[in-house]
Image (cartoon, rainbow, N blue to C red):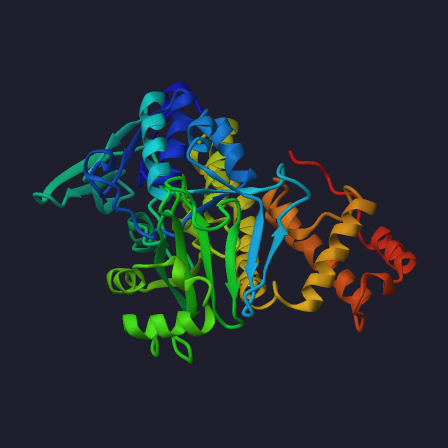
Length: 454
């Protein structure tokens, strides 16, 4: 892009919008961010979903590019693995990686947004709050915003628009009005509700802080993620209909009965269960697919606006941040918006589809497999193969979470590795029964050495 063309407008000043604004402003772009809400630093954070976010290497890499990692990590809480709470009261820590260098971090969505807004403005991005995109004239390149406080209209000329305004994207609706994006939304037949574990009487954590706690119960589950204020955000995931389901567990009293029966060790940790249940709405879960993310050189979508996913792999934010780095690189590498947007979409759309699929698969693993004997046997064998074949047999979770290889590559290799594990453990109960010679030969034959991160 020549200097004259280096102007861009971003719709949405949430996590992805603020990060992209920083990356481009640092490159010398004139960046304008338009946010429908007021400034959360003045009136408090009023975002959408409040599920805690899991920050992993892909997201940390993007933050490093923006010079934001240190500020964010000061607010983050280490999670070294899943603390599985069995129905009989037993607990087991299942590490995500080999040691604490392979871990994920719990971050508060609101605090993260505030931090990234500050960094974006310091980088030179111009943030315009109380500007809701009403419609866009893509031929005239004029975006029409409304201030919902007084109904005032604002017509803003643009060179190109980027939609970083989430799953309910107003820019996506505006683009869909002039072209078919091939939009499909597939609701999950499950939903969620949030509760809270407060600090202990001494001000500390009530349970192990450096873990993602999970209560798997087959078709439903509870998870708890730590916050830096020594609380845990508890999220109950259940079917919309069933026993239990959100149609049969409706009242605070019914919720308490469910927890007393199925999450007995969690119940004493949530003293305000009834209050939280009454105050917090049921949240919907869905996957958004698009056949097209861009409109020539006039507009492009990224993050949840292009590929919203269910939260069960903890990769929604990390994927969106990876989008930001990729888009900034393509804007650097191409002479016009149309070429940059097309290259960005060609790179990222297959990877988004792969992580969307893996996020759905991980829900079944979390709620139904982490306490299963076959799963635990295969997990132990997976770690053994990682040690025997470093760089060739890399666990699925490590590829997705601790590396930056393309998601589609991680999916392809994971499918091969899962098949190897199933075949090697079929009908077996112990690791010492595995035919290691045959398994080693199969690994060498079916898996090439993994290329390092770019």
